[in-house]
Length: 208
Length: 372
Image (tube, rainbow over all chains, first blue to last red; front, side, top):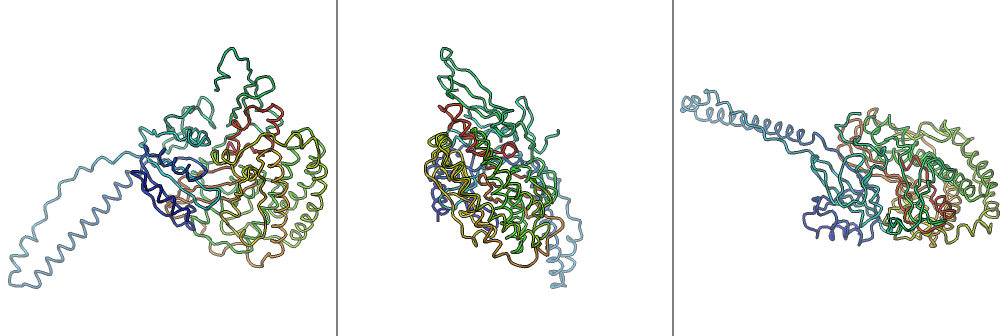
């Protein structure tokens, strides 16, 4: 009930993708994906709807694009193989159906197919950090998860600590662990890590 | 820093409460900017016992991580481990036998009572009353003895397994738990006579450190802190998990939002937890305490999962991101104390130093749960 209302009001914000989630299997109701510049607009909507903040955290998707590219290449290769096989089968069938023209058809098939020029695999897109915001409601059961992707080389997004003061510490913690930079945050000094820490231990390429 | 504190002609001084201070019950430091006896600014400084439990989650298998959650909130460790196993069970689709769920609820509620009893003793001790601590510790010790019999540990339990429990309980546990419910229930009027009706305590708590419902919402405060501010939010009722829907219990809510309200919520919760334990013992079904088919290596399907439980201090949640392998890709621990202490700076502004101690105690903070 609440979930449907929230989905409607969130979908009104530009560039926002809203989806319903199977609560029993995943543990939350609404899954929202949006570009980083829209985060304040979306959080303001949640604030008006009376949600409270559960947490803010990050996920480092290092190597995701490479894996995706590999997967895509694998699929393309498989598709090509299937197409070739289908073509060969079709040719064989055609040859079987028309014995008169066997020579004419068989001749080109015998020729080895021209080797495809080794395609320059496009540079895989840059990996990103996923910033996950969890919101919940005190009166009605409705958990909203917001996901924002920011590039690893420039992990910047607007702070929401002026809307939810509780976000202040969560953002500082995310800055500690992932090096995410929340623009407009009053103080991003280390919260849980030592005060002179310049490392981000939850990055997947962090070596102690 | 506020305008006043930044003004060089305005005379303030900085007072460090902690990291070694009896009222913080652990290594937490609060930097206080004082104007005489009044607090201008209060800033908790965290991280003195930060252990990076979230990183440990990423380089251990699901089973290897089982002992970790009880090191977070070591006073209601049972609820933390419940949150962990419930998240993984949800992700991997493991069903739990009914007897195991009942025993989970019984042990979690006993643990909640022991946690509240320790809080009661320590809180009154902070306010200058020494005697109640001795009574509370005595009662708490009985609970710890009982739980030690079945779990093998006094505080940092590792009793729950994915799909059930480490071992079944015996008749002695059931009898002991019944005796315990009676013992503590009989003791409660004594506690109320000794503490709640004490005029000094009332004057130290009533109207002190008010926290509004709106403040709870903006900071994400849950548990007795939110319920003392008139928010009837309890994960056990709001988002029923395990076998809680089968129990008849109330969620105590007080509207005042002061330290007294938070005190009364916890005192009432002890009785509600005893009711749950009693019903659980009555209804305890026969059967196995471990699911038959639990894979030796747990590999939840790709995706992310969330699960929250009501720990003694509020909503304890875990966000698990799985990449389909036998270790979590990311394990986020949402601890109640972290959110509850984040509002301290705002709530303590303008209070007397002595009243800040009362406010601090009424938040019932466990430092390892904040620092993780």
